[in-house]
Image (cartoon, rainbow, N blue to C red; front, side, top):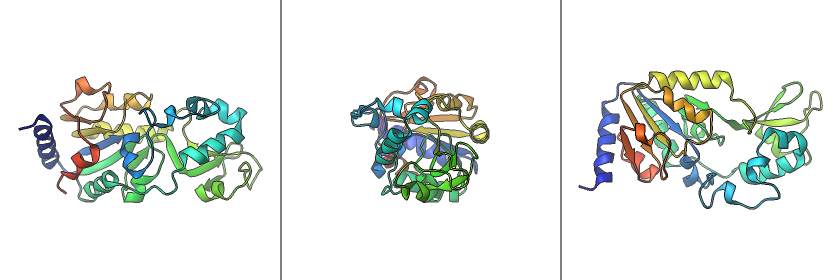
Length: 246
C-alpha cells in the first residue's frame, strides 16, 4: 500500500476516534488557494509579484502610516478577493464542527471564508477584511464602506483615516483572539496543521502549546513542526480532508 494512502487511512481513523469537540484545525494561506486566493511564498504567490515596493513592505504598519494611498491601492487590488467562495476545505471543516467533532478553526487568513462556509468558532489571528476601524476614534465600518470610497477612506465620525482590521507587519496580534486560540489548541486531542509554512510569528509559535494525543501536518512544503508531527501527509489538502467521514 502506498505510504500516503496509509497515512490518510491513519488520519481518518484518528479523527473518527476523536472525542466530541476534540479536534482543532490550524490553517494558513494554503487553505484558500483552491478558492482562487494566492498564497504568499509559493513561486506564484503574492511575494513573488512585482510591485513598486516589496509586498512585505507594503503590508507593514509603517508603510500604511507613511503611504496610505499606495497601501490602499495594493490592498484593494491584491488582498481583497471579492469573488472568492469557500472551497471544499472550508465546507468540510464547517461540516465537522456541525457534527460535533471539530471544536474550532484557528486561521492566519483574513478572507472570512471559514465564517462564510458556516464555521461558528473561528479565531482569525490576523484579522478580517470584513472589518475596518478609525485609527483615531476606533469607529468601525464594514467592507462596503471601503469599497464605496473613491479616495482614502475617512471616518464618518471624526474624519480620521480608516484602517482595515488586519494585522500588518510591525503590529501585535489581538490578545483576546490569541487567548481564545491558545485555549482551543491546548484543550484539543487532535491538532491538524494545514496550508501554512509556519514562518509567520507569533502565530506560528502557538501550535507549540498543543499537548494532546496526535499532531497531524498536511502541507505541500516543509514546516518547523514536521519533526514533532505524529503524522505528516504530503498530499493535496482538499482531497485529504474530503476523505473524512462526518
